[in-house]
Image 1 (spheres, helix red, strand yellow):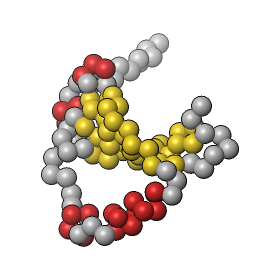
Image 2 (cartoon, helix red, strand yellow):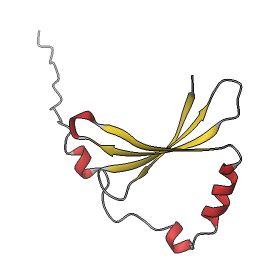
Image 3 (cartoon, rainbow, N blue to C red):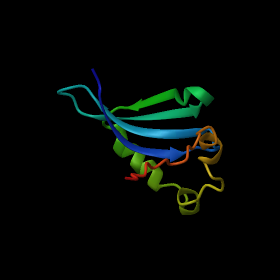
Image 4 (tube, rainbow, N blue to C red):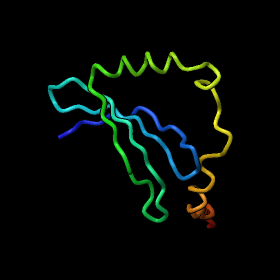
Length: 102
């Protein structure tokens, strides 16, 4: 059985996608990293579509590769509000308070 530790949720390239980064390990083994592409599926919520599991030794190589990116690309901001469309499926109910009248 895998033991998972959630590390991050990254905004996707549109409001209906996100990328999750999760540490995954089996008891007694070295943890590794799993990158998951998820899409919002309406009433079903977020669904994992793809998983990439890196071997423990690949994590440092990934860090080095990310550090070689152009700074303007690495530090760029996403131009859209990633949660707007997905959150529009959430129904907000008014807060009801009970008043005690004696």
